[in-house]
Length: 398
Image 1: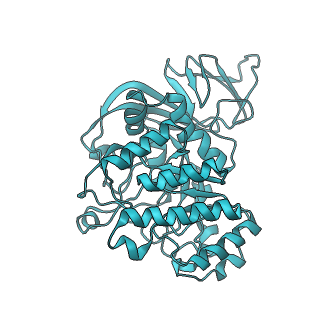
Image 2: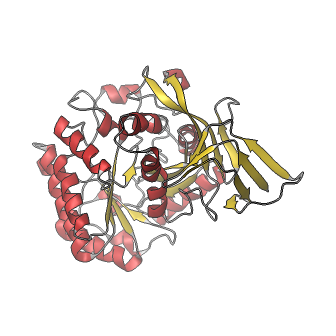
Image 3: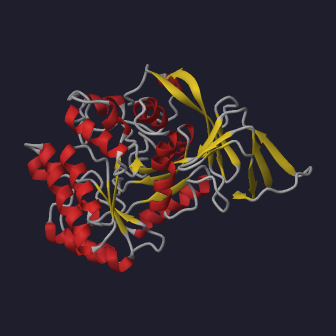
């Protein structure tokens, strides 16, 4: 299959170009002669970017599919411009066995909607110090996490790092000292971040810090990055959009002005690697009962674009770097750049389009969004995966 994407503004992490993009068998390639077998795709003057990649997603499958499942979550991701997600292991059962892992991966491939990566638990079933399940790991595994829980046992974390090094694995960590968070959640995040950033530096293991939210945590990450530690980090759209909202139940919580200002400063200075959604579907009843988290895949680009690019803080190239290029590097996939040899995963966006985000338009099974009724800017129009159209707003293809 050969295709030419034309009449576009192509934007990735470093370039802005009006050149046509040539695709063959799902990969970007050199320019070729046109004939009757070539599909011409007119992008109508809109921008075309490498499709987004979410490093932190919950699809609730298996165990909680009344909130989300692999199919509904994948369709939600496509609507938001994503063709790749990294799923957290806090399902039921928890992803602590090859059987559960393999089942999720196979069903994701069979859907043929987006690319799914599955994270494995650090400790078995999130127990404090049981690492027995790490003796027999899936061959294609990349990341370990006790998502939603920090590893409070220092020795267990030390041993897990040694196992990860032996198996060339990475960590994506929720940082929270459980006992301290009952009294001071800011210190709880800061303290565990400092510990694990030091362990990454001292033991030379790659650690990715999830949904960093405090001034102390991001400053610790910047300090150890400057020392050469193999660490990366992400922030969520909601932590750079809101402040001082104790009524918005999310974990980690919405922080204070000083924390948001620190996150934005570190984004501008290049210390933040990724924007990740922490897409967390819940029912209305569960949210009313205080369950933490919100859905975010469908609104991540528009809200990040508003806070970071329209404000003048960073360029659109920088935002693509955090939403596409850097996550692709972490997942070790040929995505995230408009360059020969990279997959033709493209998201086409109308940057000037304002739209009201209505509950009836949400594709997720859950409707627990912070942005219902808000006017957002920058609407996703089409999404291609390996050159195949997977989402079309106007044609209602999903």
